[in-house]
Amino acid sequence: MSDDVRRVAKLIEQRNSIDTELAAIIRRPALPGHLGDWIAARIFGITLEPQANKAVGGRLDDGRTVGIRWYPKRENILDLKEGGPETYLVLTGPKSAPASSVGTSRPLVIETVYLFDAAALMDDLRARGRNIGIASSVREELWRAAEVYPRPSPAFPLTDDERQLLALFSPHQP
Image 1 (cartoon, helix red, strand yellow):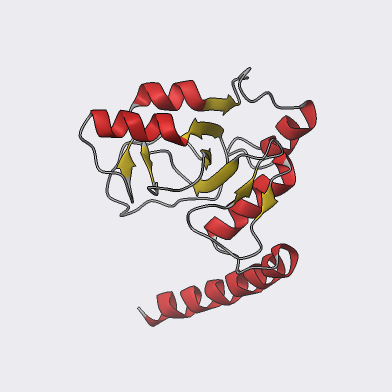
Image 2: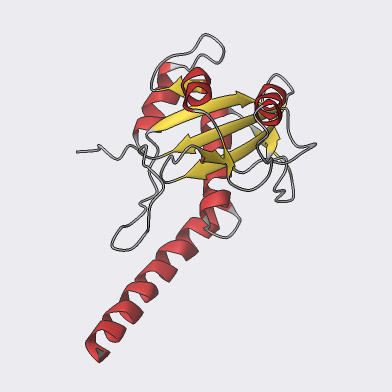
């Protein structure tokens, strides 16, 4: 038992060292939300809000406000805010059914990117009598319609450079 504690302490020490390096680059704590904001800003040219903000992360180059979310697994849930941004840019890892986290891990990877129109998303949730807030249940059809990577979308076309940068975070890297 004490060997496990020692091993975990050593791994946390290594993780803290990595998090310190990441924080020095992104200039915020190396939490998934802040990392996702930074990655999205660098890849998509998003202007981030000067202060971390759960509702609006920044602005797209066309001026629309955007909430940025990074979920290591896509479980068809999305944290939303009434009166929040005009769009939600969502970076996700592999699709997964909601299940117990016992015996699993959630590596920080990006397999798919989605851009949701917030008003349309809220209208759909209201029409179905669903709650809007933390872990809002979003229909599969809406996820498919909002996909912009890896499947191309005319609504938000990505450059080859953006695609190559996103591929760096793929769970399928050799």
